[in-house]
Image 1 (cartoon, rainbow, N blue to C red):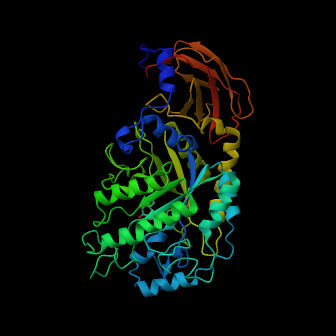
Image 2 (image 1 turned 135 degrees about the vertical axis):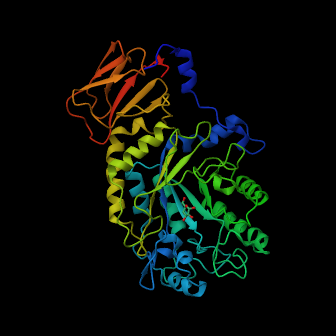
Image 3 (image 1 turned 180 degrees about the horizontal axis):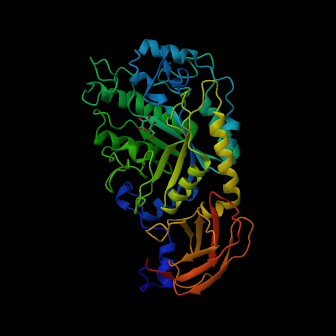
Length: 456
Ligand code: GLC
């Protein structure tokens, strides 16, 4: 332990205030305070539902009897399915069991505060009643309903924030594909008409979505194609912010996110970084970020993917993310009949049960003040309250917290309220815990009135 330098109460109070953010990411004209106000709900939310749903749910990972090695939503590309043939999947898409209220309720019961659903993935099929192409779920399928309209209404009814994923890459639109090339997404090729696609299709579609469905978030993807330029990115970011000044936009609108963390540097565009399938070891200090993660190994539904993460890993991942100051956007891939796989629903329910008892340690919390992770779990904090998330409950009931210079004013288990003794020892603060933890996944000890931290 390397104690000694004590962080004063004043410094701790300053730490507890809204952390400084990289202001160069905000568009001209927005003050830091305005940006904080715009991001406030998103920062407090911590946990959201990602939904990948499109025509790819119909093949569900199998084309011509062949199981694709790619994720479900990439099947068109991975199996080299010609457009006319792929359209037949879209033609058959008839998710009669779709129930927007049930989906929103599942997210609500999981303790999630927002939903982001694919409005159009790389396949180019619009999951809403766009006027810009008949290749959409209302006009092209027997279903004839607009699931995004229904979700927007259900979300409004249930007080859930709704956002839309939108792919810049489009394997169906003739002006967006690389010409004279048998693949749809060669980053080496360009389409001379790409700008026409941006002006007469992409922007008008975003206009339809923002003005017609009032999303809280736009979540871009497919920015990696060569045709998409930095100028396009700025133009489109400013365009959607003009349409709805309060909207929150991810960093994939811009070029140059780095592959590892999916995060544009401080000069990048967008409001938050998007690490994919990973939690950055130290978080992403100074910027807002959200890890997006699958429950099995696919985003879009694959009938044979049963590589499910268990609830314990998913919950601990949420806590890990929160302890580093980020959000977790956890994915489900609904089936072609409109239902969410039961394995996903079970995990959502179990996470919700834990959050109902322990949500105070997650929502509105900020990053742990300790850069190093304790061996037994994680810390989150809310002002002068620290939450010790104990993953591994000590067998002797003793938990040493060298990170604390003085005992907290009050210590107790968040779930159930059992008081915990906190004494000052030679090694900082020592907690005496009850024999049985309230949860074997993560038992949270609340430490109120923490004013002096050891410099760890
Ligand atoms: C990737 C994939 C895409 C998925 C996304 C989620 O960029 O291309 O299929 O939607 O990640 O973050």
